Amino acid sequence: METEQLISKKELLARYGISYGALYRWKRKGLIPDEWFIKQSTVTGQETFFPQKLVCERVETILSMKEDVLLDELAQQLSGEEKKQETMMLVTVYGEKTFRMNEVQSIALTDKNGKKQDITQLIRDLLNKCGEQEEKV
Image 1: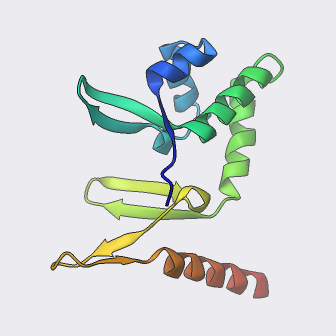
Image 2: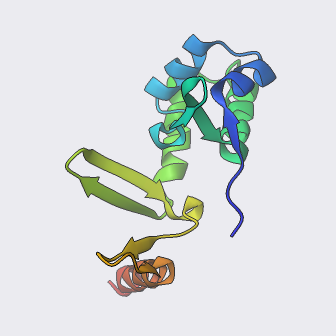
């Protein structure tokens, strides 16, 4: 399975000519989802990366609309779109994280003997079953 291409925060800021402050203001306002900020260790320390296709499309949308629409209004529009998407929430002792199912590539469990089992299709089937039950109500 092909892994999603990532773009570093530094590359993103340079590509679109946006400031660090603008990026994090957009994050606070919900324009860029928190789960798109991926922290990874590098040889120079820890850096932030983003799913390239998703974040570039979002930044282009923000830049094209920010002159005509207030950021708060744009955040409402975008969050409305995101609420319509299927999600999976993972809750741990460290907090919770929500993933959009269209972004999930694989879900696997590993037992104590190291045997790995892919359960991606099982989760997708459960999600479809939930959707079918909602339609009947």
